[in-house]
Length: 329
Image (tube, rainbow, N blue to C red; front, side):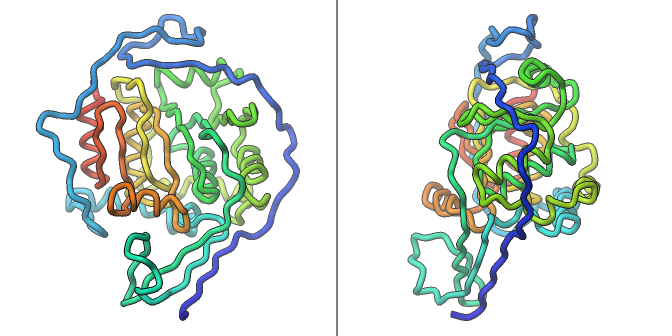
């Protein structure tokens, strides 16, 4: 019916120089409050720490399109990225949308309601990795942000190992696996490929899990890096330094995408606390929006699932408070 929108990614793809396979040194990290005595060991022997939700904690009811009054400036600052990056990371590759009548989409399917119509959204996804890609990075790094944007565009699930400044756990692991502490660092357990350099990671991911084209806003070299830096001005320094915290035995799971300012303020805290987490990427056009809609009877991001305590919850401000109460030492 009326109102067709089609957002496609311009083609810009080069070969993948320097791509190499590096043996993936696997390691496990259990809950700990101490830095390992032997950081070169592939398995860390640590003290078990019990985890439980705060006493009498009750997940809040989700509130659509609302910002808690004390968090307005946080969300405004995080929203600057939408301006400087022209919405990169908001839409999945090949995104298209059309307005249809309400009766054309069943009530058990996710769809945005606008002015008496529903928005039918589709995308064009490449091959899906069997296992989540693993990325070592931190929130306030412009090179890391470039990679997070392509993750949203390609609709990939990623296991993030946060590496904030002075973080005791994962910075040393990167040096062990790749030979230096440089970020981002990607490990693809599906292929055995590991690599540094954000541009090379982007080329690899679009070649392996996309259509081979690098999105225009990620293909501009120095200009891309500069605008990535400008995008973080409103939250300068957030998500860069370690806050002493308890490391859980299982990674948290967060339904989110890079372009959302609400997701960004949660990600900042996950990085500062050095909490491993799987991002279930669900930018506009992602089929995972329907999965979350069925799972939670509602779609809204961020949505946190904590397997260490059993808590599942919406609302970014309350998620931040929950993480502080549960994981800060």
